[in-house]
Image (cartoon, rainbow, N blue to C red; front, side, top):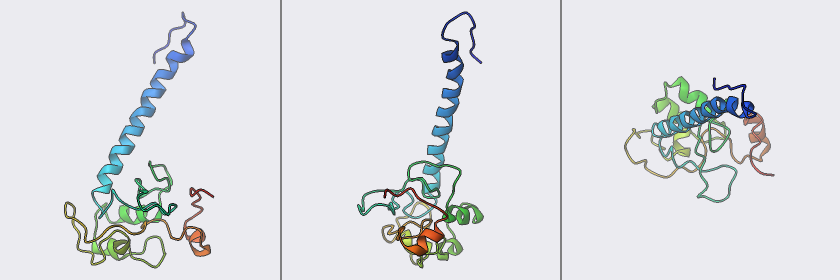
Length: 151
């Protein structure tokens, strides 16, 4: 710990290790998501279920926060973990978020034959871990208290 009791800025010097640690956590979080994105079809291009704008992307697909991971993972992330972080026919054919569409359909792989490195058959059309439309009564129940969409 960088502490010097002879200067008036001792609080500032004590904060530097905390800042460095926080920066490391953010960097690791971002890198991990990029790796996970490559393991699912269209993982870097999943539409934001809160937006009508089709160019708005949900980067942290397995989380309830669109841009970075946090401790609250969604149902797709739980199923992805159960499949050993591998896109399998079983994971593809699941409807992780309960909205009536299988994960493969939502991610642009309706025939469940995508493999990492290949181009998916189509674009991602929905989020596999957040029930849509998010403001429907059914989805409000299924989304486990998800409330990040602007009112």
